[in-house]
Image 1 (tube, rainbow over the protein chains, first blue to last red):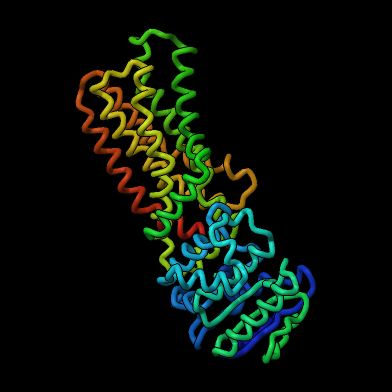
Image 2 (spheres, rainbow over the protein chains, first blue to last red):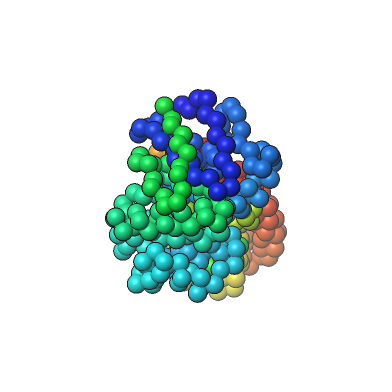
Amino acid sequence: MLRGVSLEVAAGQLVHVAGSNGVGKTTLLRVLAGLAAAEQGAVAWQGQPITAGFESYVATLAYLGHSDALKADFTAHENISHEIGLRRQVTAAEIDLALARFGLAACRDLPARVLSAGQRRRLAMARVMLTGASLWILDEPFTNLDRGGVQLLSDVIAGHIDEGGAAIIAAHQPPVIPRHAADCLELA
Amino acid sequence: MGLVYHGDLILAFRRWEQIAQPVVFFAMITTLVPLALSPELAQLRQIAGGVLWIAGLLAALLGLEFLYRADYADGTLEQMLLSGQPLALLSLAKTAAHWTSSGLPLVLVSPLLAISLGVPTDAMGVLMISLALGTGILSALGAIGAALTLGLRRGSVLLSLLVLPLAMPALIFGARGVDMAIHGDSARGPLLLLGAMLVLSLTLSPLAVAASLRISQE
């Protein structure tokens, strides 16, 4: 499906993966995240193939796919505490802070299934932000977000890049991230 | 790991109708047997061991539906794979949570249902222990089947086909053990064998599940 794709990402770099529907953006991101294996070629992190030391590789990345990866019956707070808790210790205060940043303070104790699609996307991004990962791999993160949400997310991504993180974003529209220009990888 | 166990239990209890389903199924079968066959306790006592075990096994099989399916559908399975934690350990925690919410209720309800089949009270202990071990085996083996059939059409049918043959040794020894207890003999042999099968399944299952979960993502 995908052929001849070559990509290098350094710290502080923002990459926009573009292409029409079905061309393979999601597949590429999943291969980069280590969820799927490429038939030919390999993904390397800091010079090492990710297959050697997979666990340390995924500790440095946060992945957001098409689904929000939220449990419908957990509250917003519980969703984050259970998912981040798997990776690192996180305090309730940290989670509350992140929820507030994403405008979800009122939804703290609501089960995820009653949140709107836009709120769920924000919650998913709050989770990404809290992982503390240096590489963010985001598949259509702006889906379902209103204008305020798009602005907020762009600011959060800008903040992440400011701190030296890297982000690979698949999106139909080029993301407008303050202070940073995206390198575009066009898939055909 | 404790987080996963705890979390899964919370989720299971918030959907308590999922916990109730296997129990209701278990109760239904054991209630229907005296109606369909014979109300004579003496006759029922002969088949009680087998009936309780078949019903228990099928009920536990029903409970397997919920393992991993929801996680696969809502995307949290992907996050589990990317959490950096050893997948085998996470799988063990999920299997344990599954048994607690699915197998344990069956064990607790079994004495009540056994009375209606004429099982004497001295045999209740053996019944409960054998079912506890048996449902544990089924949770462990069933997890492999659940992980292998993720995302497949008609996955539930395949799941049953995969898991039932694996569960047959447990069924044979479990039913035998209960029978022996009903007749007043010591059921130590079958119970020890069940215990050994449980240890074997618990050791191998997490590794097989971890491999299957990774495959499901490709």
